[in-house]
Length: 556
Image (tube, rainbow, N blue to C red):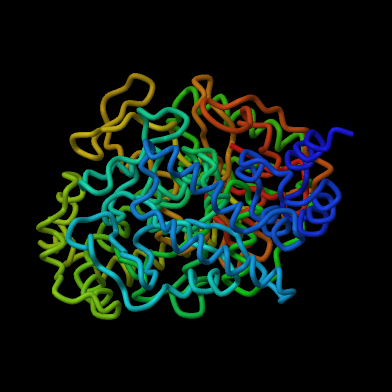
């Protein structure tokens, strides 16, 4: 038997979550960790990697080395600000030593992850991609990240991002960062602000990692790089927050900000979420009979090439028994506009000083940060922050309009008996990089120039402001070979059923083709029977499922 062929077949067809039971024995039978190539290790999902290390299929050090080599090979993508090579290898060797000694391993032992560089990690700089924080080393690690580290995850490095997370292109003009490039077309943006994490995942530097999301920053880059990104529930704060990382992430808005897991598959995202929250991973449930709202507000004005992919998604869902409810959310956009900028451009005035103090970052002020901003688009936004342009509107934004926005969503779900809202994560594929401004204008279908930022967050921003969760998964590729994402949004609450909506028996086999520089790429719509998964318990843009179901793993 050709054992190499059998291993490849296993890696391409096994369920990400089912791998924990099956992967180890198979690899041991095939001769141990020396049998796996670097390419095979790079293709593993998170659960596959954890199972292989735990069961002796590969060493944590070999896995880390394979991923570090890929990160170094693709430095042209500018995915990293800090590559934690020495720290990652030391941690991997400690895990291998514990395994050799017969010690019990924690649940994520050896899993390499990346972390967006606005999330605190003790002993490494947290730069937020901005010059004033270039050498800022926080005293503590963000709780969500600490839970992953305590579970055995290894931080491969801190990833690049849109400067200070104030944008969706990840075209960072700070001299130590550089513009993050989309691996499908390096002249184009990967989305942002968590672009570095998305690119590291898409380009096979890791299987998963952490980003943050204020108005779409885990979901927009997931959509544009063919990966999965989750925005957990935020609600009204306190117990309604799924993740709590107070003053441990370089902030924009305490009302809107959240850490969010990202991964190559929804199963990868679900695994990280389960460890962070200490809750079980949801089991899959059937699509048939689910009711998904498809409001015109989110479906109008789409790029033509993206629309072709989305039409195919809708057809597949209907054929799988999903009921699409074409009822609009009247007044959503106008109401959202009363919340979005008044919150995001006022709260940094208090939130940034609080973060700096709590993190032990001395000698840096809000004014210092603003003065040294390198990206013109971010400098403009921070000018509005310092001038407190929206200060007079803030009280009404949080006290009147945000509750009204939440009530509008709640009534829309209740009045139409919906499980979720389904929509394209973005309304166009990745735009070309604007190396002068960082973020400028785009044109849709040859129309007049429109603001890049507002255009790309059009569909993700309202749910963010309402505090409800969201997930983006790959919808497929446009005719030009660019990934686009599908999203859904649910009423609120927990993520317990976020990846549970798809029954494996309803999914067709994926058709794949070789990508431009790496891996397998899911062709348009073939993975989208997974799409309903996220919204049902509190996920927003781009649901997928596939928890435990092999046909539903989408690999970029």
